[in-house]
Image (cartoon, rainbow, N blue to C red; front, top):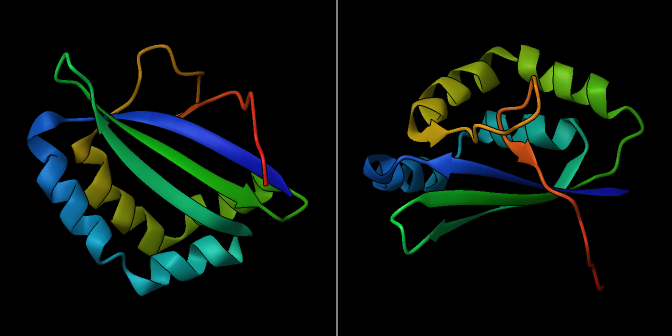
Length: 112
């Protein structure tokens, strides 16, 4: 199992919409997440004093081929439709790695 942490900006005028979407995630999207070997997936929201909003996600990957599982998720039409709803709310970080939407974070501590 591998833990992942990621960060992404959230447009201030889209906070309510993003929360509304995630209060009722489509069942097929949740099933695809499960099929792609993601568990314990959580998204946190934080508003900083400068007014910027950031989303922080954490999840555990229990599969053996992360790239293949992520490609499977990206190819799924329902997931693509879900992302089309969510992405206009989001603001990717300018310094993210090429090909990233959510910017990867380095794990520096974990305790069970």
